[in-house]
Length: 272
Image (cartoon, rainbow, N blue to C red; front, side):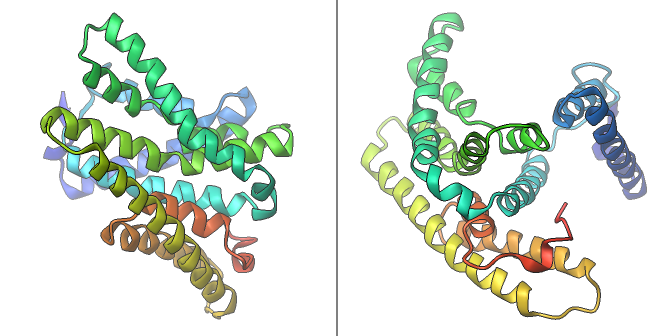
């Protein structure tokens, strides 16, 4: 078994390059086979990981979290760019219900099953339910891409998948805190959730307005720099909102999807 943390820098870069090439090639294979590319990515990761072949063993949770967050920022921003506000507005109510009440219901159903099947405590079962209670934005955007689905249904699913992460994260953090600190105040956690959602909403719209206005008016020497600038704005919007205590993931998606300006400079240049 190979521990990736023992690789040299050049070795890690080599592995990263191979994975990037394999990922691009798999998108062609998935398009021909009619299988979402995300399924192939997951399969490749399981085969190369410690659970199957043991070729690569990776146990740095902090680094994995950082890479995952950056990837999710780009995925949500890209999904927001492809989701037009005029399509979201008619289904905004149903999307919000699915992203909040839907996550709660799913968490409860999974928790009941986990409580009786795995012999967990109720808090542990609810924690497991909250972890798997939200739809994955990458999976939804990947599956819906190029599919013949009614615009209303597609817009509802895209908006829901882009906005349900804050709810799932709040539930996960809340149940972890209740397990570790049983005397924690539920009302304090509820206030924290409302603060996160409120800041994410306000800063997402405000910074999205500023970012799209800037990108549409600035003149750069190379067209490819607009995608780099957009990715930089996406990472900044997430981190700035998160540092202030808001939901950075919600802010990133809203910044891309609900800006009053169209992202004209990015119409022919994709972020990823």
